[in-house]
Image 1 (spheres, helix red, strand yellow):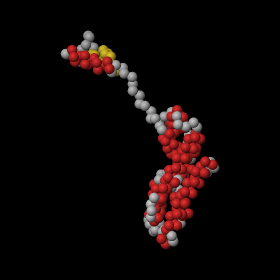
Image 2 (cartoon, rainbow, N blue to C red):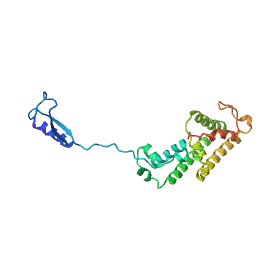
Image 3 (cartoon, one colour):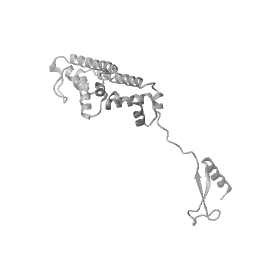
Length: 216
């Protein structure tokens, strides 16, 4: 073998931290040093798969998923860390306590399901189309069987933080429904759609109450 090719091979083996080992599992093959065949063994350090690095938002999303499944009692650091495939250190990199975590989750939910979420419907100028969009979103989700953060929170009204957040979100939704019905005018102007017979704000909200606008 030309010298240059030997040098090339040596260079590659050194970079991979390979060392020669003599084995004799195939004595009929190429021989080296009295019947042993040369084999290269890779001694490079094993590359371990890195655990995912979770953001503050990832932990908030995990808390909301837990609330939808089992209320506030399901929001626990160790079980969720195990489910997410990380250590508790990942959690404490973003929150100092479970209470702070829950507060952040409630704030996030209120923002996405309060005025910010309702703005999407309020932007629909035609009140008939707006009402249809709101109720259709509620009915579509309720028929999907998916879990709802809103329903999970309804079982936690004894917690003052939850009660305050739900009161604000519910009030925002009722205000938008009331304004929509006011714009529609008389009961006769309320659209007959696949959603069923016309409804007034309170009964319309009973559907929406169980299903936040974007499905959680």
